[in-house]
Image (cartoon, rainbow, N blue to C red; front, side, top):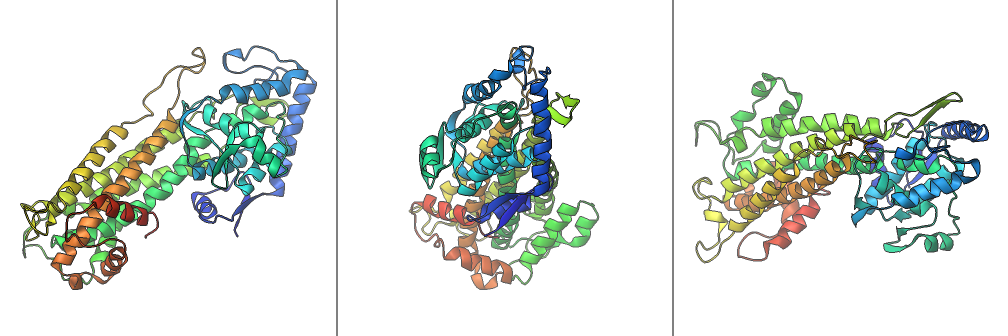
Length: 496
C-alpha cells in the first residue's frame, strides 16, 4: 500500500498516477502543511472578530460582494453557498476523476493561503482514504470563479448532503457517513468559498487525460510499425540523419522508436526496391507523431503548475494582506486542454489514413481487398474504415477550441470565463475516439501481417502480435467486429 504525502507544493502527474493505480493507496498531510493551515485560519478568525470587510469572509459573493454579513451568519453563508451552487447537470464524472479532484483540492488548501480549518482538511483526507466519492455532474461549469458547480457538489458531500459513490453503489451521503461514524462537517467562515474557488475539476480530468494520451501516443508507434510492415514500408525515411537535420527532439525520438520497433524485420524495404517513396501516412510518422508528442510537454508543465497552485479567492498572505485576485480563472488549463485536443486528434487522423491504405486494393499492394477472406461474399474490414473515418470526423468537431469562447455571468461581474472544463471533457472524448481508431488500425494490421507472414515480423512487433493475437482472432470470416475493437481498446489502456 502506497502513501501519498501532500505538502501543497510537490504534487506531480507521476505521483498521482501511482496513487490512482494502487487501489489501497492513502494520502497523508505533512506536519508543515498543518502549520500553514493553522496560521492562515487564525488570520481569518481575527478578521471576523474585528469585523473587517473582506470578500467572501464578511461579505456576500459575486455581485453581492458589497453586502456585509454579520458575524453570527458566517456559517449559514458558507452552507448556503454550497447548496445554491450545487446545480450541475448531466452524467457524473468518473470516480477516478472525482478522487483526483479531491486530492488536488486538498493539496491546494494545504498551501496556507485559504484560511480553512484543520477539521476541513482532515474531512477531505478521510473521504479520500475511505474512497467516499461524491457524485459530481459533469456539466455546468464556466471555468472561471473556479469550477463552481462541480466543486460545490464535491463539497456538498462533506457536509452530509447530496450523494456519493461508495463500494460501487450510489448512496445518500449522510447514510454512508453515519455507517462509517464520520460526522458531517459544519463549514466555518471562508470555507465554502475555499472549497469551490478553484480549477480542480478541469485539472483532475486534465491529469487523467494526460496519462491516457501519453500512453496512447506511445502505443500508436508500435501499431504504426505493424502497418508499416504490412505494406512493406520503406525504412530509409526514419534514418537518424534525416530527423537530426530538422532539430525537433520529439520527431527524432519518434523516428528512433520506429527504427527500434522495425529492427530485424523481413517485411520492410529500402527506397527503390518496391517504390521510391511511401505515402505521407507512413513516411511522415515521425514528423506527425512527433509534433503531437510536443504538445505533451507543454500540457504536463501547465498541469503540474496548477496541481500545486493557490487558486482560491481571496488569498491570505498575512494579517493585513488578504488580497482578492483571479487565480481561479482556468485559462491556462483551458488552453492546455485545447492544445492536447489537437495533438491527439492528429494521431487518430493519420491512423485512419493508414487504415485506408491497409484495406484499399488500389493502395495495399498484394493484400486482399478489404482483407476479405472471400471477396464479394464477405466484406472483411470494409466498414471498419467507415467507423474510423466517423470517429476522426467527430474529433474534428470536438477539437474546436473551447477556450476562445466566453459568456458573461453574475450580472457581468464575471465577464470573461475560460470554458476549461468543457475543453477537458472534449479532450477526454477525443482520447476515447483516438483509442478506438488505433484499435481498428491494430486489428486490421494484425490480420494483414498474418497474411504477409508472421515469421517475417521484427522481434519487438512479434511480441506485440503474440500478445494481441491472444485477445482477438484473424479476420477469416465476417462477424461482429465491434467486439474485437472493444477488446483491443481495453487492452490499449494497459499495454505499453
